[in-house]
Length: 264
Image (cartoon, rainbow, N blue to C red; front, side):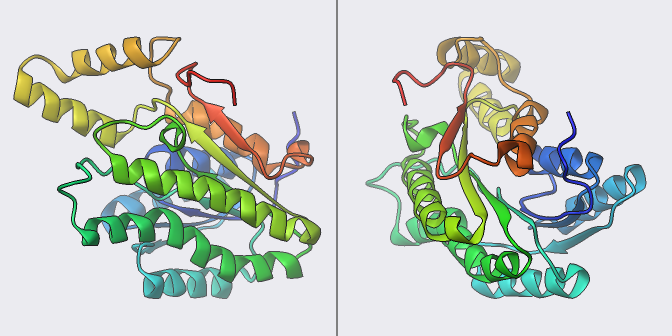
């Protein structure tokens, strides 16, 4: 299927690993130029070099923490100076939280609010006007099944991802007239570094192998009894980025292996 994405410019936060890197790889394979940011500069530089070596597209990377407004501005200035346009924005940066409501201080709530919600707000304020000048664009928010079906060990993550989904809907309503499509994606179990680290921590506390911990989680949560690969999630992102999804906006899509227990 021709996705008609060649020559476009995509901005991806959290683009050096996991789902973000998988989306970057798929987009580059379609001929999309990339602007990536992530906190870990060494990991980001390696991702940029690899993508640029394998695909005939321009790839730039900026080490930035998108929970901070000043670093978002620095990243956006680099994007504007390099490309002068943005067609696709993937708000992917995020991480699990792991706390209890009664023990978590205000500062922890504020950090995840800034990371998961305000980063998307700030990036929209910067890049929507650029998209409008270019005739339109696509914005995708990588949220989580936890926005609807919370995990007990990360209430802050659950709350902020739910807020991100609502922000996505509100933004979609506001910019539809400008030919900008906005959607949220709620993945379920995806085999990324944070899940492995969580399993390793649980295995250290209880004994046993971390792989068995993940197998138990998959058997309990997913009707397919497995984790998705980042690439499987990225394939759906790429479709939503393309004109093939031209009638898709203001929606939230679940890619969860049947984990969600209700009809949405």
